[in-house]
Length: 364
Image 1 (tube, rainbow, N blue to C red):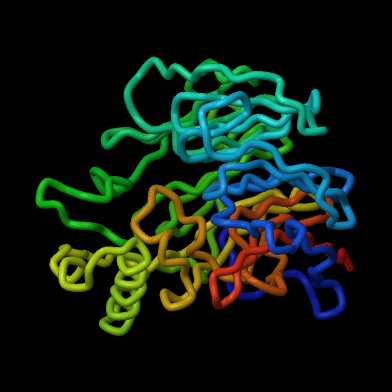
Image 2: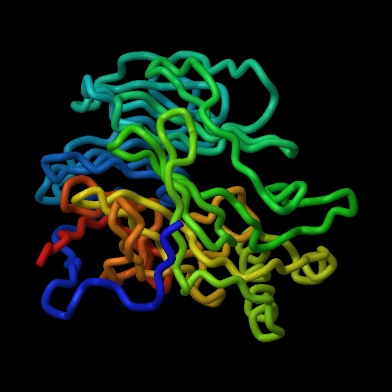
């Protein structure tokens, strides 16, 4: 195992930086709708981006300059419309946009916004399909969760599940289950973090863990690295109070009466040590640091994923696990991904208004 202390190999002169290059927003106007709970983005090699606008139930495409090219979908049951919540967006090698609607339906469009069709997703075991990601080997990998297991599966681009890849391990018997038999809501769960790698394997970690493991395509561990900044800690009184305040904001936003929200039992887990993984230029591994509770997105607390709980700071490591240093993005992003030397993701202001951005990584 590679053990890293606080120091990295970057100097002030060689450290990478990131600057904002383009903002992507729907056209403004009296009849226009802004973004409403963007749930996923897919950056394109030419600098454009495809956006899954969850609450508006639509797909938008923008060119590299930030101009909107099309918007398709919308609430409804007609062709190309979406009747339930949207979860994932994948752009396939043959230039199709795949949109996962709930656990049951897959809708595809061309990159020009033309509807290709809708097909059923029929998992052969009970559980919840939490997240899809495109693997660089041109397949889809999905995280499939039940209260007793949490694992990755290979999927074909037509939505059929092919085979299990790896199973996550935890120290808690039901780490991603938000309620136990007593109906207690848990905040800060040891949820899995994972990202496909261009080498063919995966990088995996635990949001409350102290190391990152690199595996091959079949999930066999190849190497592991740790960093002194990931030392676990107990929740302090101030940390718990701040977390509970953010949770109260989430209940208020959902319209739960304050008196009723106060009666919901809440248990605050240990602070998170990391909140996201992604692969960057030169096969580097980027690990997102958690935000302070007051800066976390309230709607992300208690979820099966840590998206929305991170800060703008990312520790960067070589493919061998040696720490290079820290990259501070201009603002915190969720649903972030790196394409080439570009970072795409969703930024949110203090009023909760969202915009999709593209940052350029400067390699010194």
